[in-house]
Length: 209
View 1 (spheres, rainbow, N blue to C red):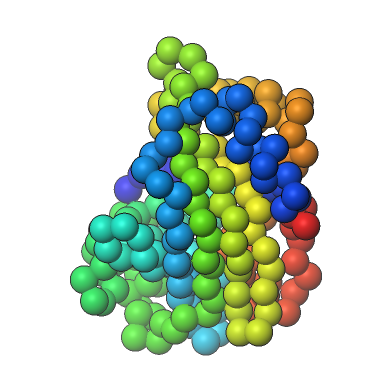
View 2 (view 1 turned 30 degrees about the vertical axis):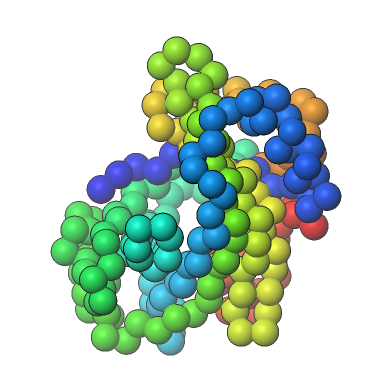
């Protein structure tokens, strides 16, 4: 298990060039070339995982497919979340043996034969490594694409700041520095939450345009 600590920001589509040319991002080392990530989220027809705050995703990326389980965290404040996640290489079938949250693992194993695709996200991810101070390391991930559930779609225009080394204050300080000159808005609704809202025909709350 790992603890994912990230701060999510959304931006208008037209602001992408401003973001990529901001000095803190433009001069940060890339992590390889930008990559398109195809993600399929699974749940039961009755959305049992959603009801228990669990997200189950298969991601196609360079090097193969990865299964990820995430459990819900406290309500994000100013885009900042902290939540447990478990990643497993995909071997052609779901494998929940590594999920160490007993309640989540029990539910996943109980419903695994009923799991079906419920929505997808497909986006281009551009990753930069930012080291704002000695001992601090942050991944800046620029995501642009779509969330799709059947015929329903909503755009993705996000900047995710993920903590690799340091503390949460480093994320907050970097976000505030970027927000001084960029049209970035704190995003408290995850891609998975927006996908589920498409599935259930709920209102999509997003600052991206």
